[in-house]
Length: 269
Length: 84
Ligand SMILES: Nc1ncnc2c1ncn2[C@@H]1O[C@H](COP(=O)(O)OP(=O)(O)OP(=O)(O)O)[C@@H](O)[C@H]1O
Ligand SMILES: [Mg+2]
Picture 1 (cartoon, chains in turn yellow, orange):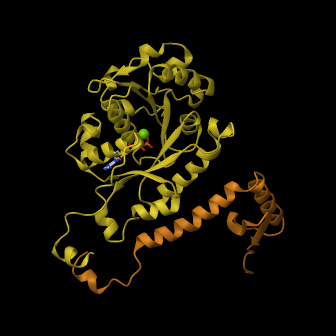
Picture 2 (cartoon, helix red, strand yellow):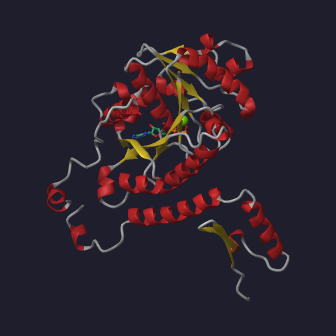
Picture 3 (cartoon, chains in turn brown, yellow):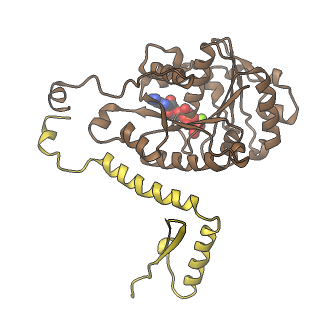
């Protein structure tokens, strides 16, 4: 049975697409057959982050409308063997994603794939609701910053009531926190919410903490998901999160600032 | 932390302020979500009634749903404008 995972946040620009690309690639590198779907209709971006933008022929909405079949629309990743990408369409028609259409595509994918990763658009409108509706579990991507944390809490409310599982009386789907763009230096200075603060407010399990890192920008510039940059802190933190996602118990890293100055080391605790 | 900061660390850090504010708003929004569906509509209707008599902003009516055992208490707080 395939597992459907939604990568969601409420707030925009917090790292959902970066995370979707990293998780899907990480799962595929571990030998799991994985499909990653861009639900951001009108603002296709996952193709760029995955580096396959020039190979897009058909998209998600084409498959829903029957203009193409799934086989024609899925793009095989160049680097990871078990990985396929279903790009979003550029249509402005926000109603293009129908519940029946999405269900049809997911059901067909589930026959062939172990994991289906859904990259949600920002907001709490139709696209975001559709990305979450059929999910078995959720990863809530949050930045250590007030509006992102508040929106994540709203999204948790939606995950508890507006998924198919919730509607069928199975309650809230499991949701875990991925805190991204974390800066231990700024946390030390009291300028940024700490991982403990965010966890205390949202009270959900922690899947991982991804540090703020230039490697993420480099990765998106070159269209190579950041888990391939396994020398970078962000790449390693994402690989740890993938391992935890698969049930491994790994300690959290990159939570403290290693590069403290002399006085920092003396007084910083 | 810079050297000079050691001598002026009494000011509350912005992160703790952020945490406090978040705890308040998140608690309030959760209570709102778990309350009956008609609450937002009731809020609008109460506002409309008050506006027949005085002009007030959207935040003039604060509603707060509290649970005590199996009783629910709806607390209404209406702030009228100061006399001009
Ligand atoms: N750990 C990180 N360190 C530095 N930059 C990051 C990190 N994570 C994400 N970013 C940057 O943040 C920006 C937004 O990332 P991304 O596109 O993944 O967010 P999103 O949540 O998918 O946005 P949208 O809501 O628009 O779909 C990008 O420029 C990305 O490079
Ligand atoms: Mg995105």
